[in-house]
Length: 265
Ligand SMILES: Nc1ncnc2c1ncn2[C@@H]1O[C@H](COP(=O)(O)OP(=O)(O)OP(=O)(O)O)[C@@H](O)[C@H]1O
Image 1: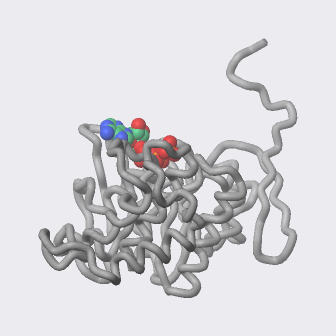
Image 2 (image 1 turned 45 degrees about the vertical axis):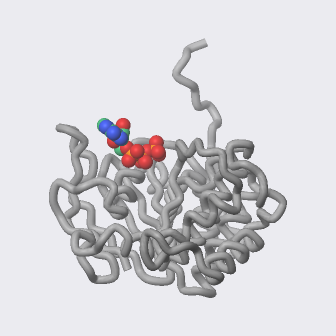
C-alpha cells in the first residue's frame, strides 16, 4: 500500500532520511518506533507529500505520489498530526465534518446526507457524542486528540497515518483509540501507520513494527521478533527486561537500577 525506495530527505544541509526502503502492506497496523529525532515524523510527512524528498520514490498503492493530485491523495490518506495549531472557534461536529471536504463533488457543492451520516457514525464510535456541540477551543489536549482522529476517519481513508496519536491521552483513552484503529484495520481492511513512543502499546496493537535510528531503518518485523533486550539497547540505549504473558505479545520493562541522571548530585 505504501512503498518507498531509496528515499532521502534533507532539511537544508542536514541529511535526515537516509535511503529509506519501506513496504507497508494493505490491511496491517504498522508502528514506527525510534528515539527522538530519528526521523519518524519526517518520514510520515514525506509519505503525505507535505515534504518533498531529495531523491528516491514514494508509491501509494503502486502509483507514484507525484502523479496523484492533492484532493485524490486526501481521499486515500487520512492524517492525525502530532499537534494542530487549529484556532477557529467551531464546534466538534463541524470540525469532524471537515474530513468530508475531499469527498465534495466540487468546491461549491455542500455536504450531502452521506457526509452527515459518516460524521455521525464516527462521533458515535469514538464516544464524542457529549462533545458534539462544544467548541474545539474548549477541549483538553486529550479530547482534542480524539477529535483529530475522528476528523481523519471521517475522510474514510484507505490509509490512516497517525503521528503520536496517544501522546496526550490517559491510558484508558490511548487503549480506546488504538483499539478503534485496530478494529478498523481488522474489520474494514484499513491500512494504519502510527508513530508511537510507547513500546508496550505498539507491541500490543501493531502487527508490524519499523524501528528507526538516526534517519535509517534499522529493523522491520513483528513485535515478537524485534522487542528484545539487545535490539532495544542498540536502538534506544536503555536496559530492559522483556517478558511474555502469551506467545505473541512482548511486554517491555525498563531496568533502571543504578542508572544515573545527567546531573551529578
Ligand atoms: N523544520 C526543520 N528544520 C530543520 N530540522 C528539522 C526540522 N524539523 C525537524 N528537524 C530535525 O530533523 C530531525 C528528525 O526530526 P523528526 O521530527 O522527524 O524526528 P522524530 O523521530 O519524529 O522525533 P520525535 O520522536 O522527537 O517526535 C531532528 O533532528 C529534528 O531536529
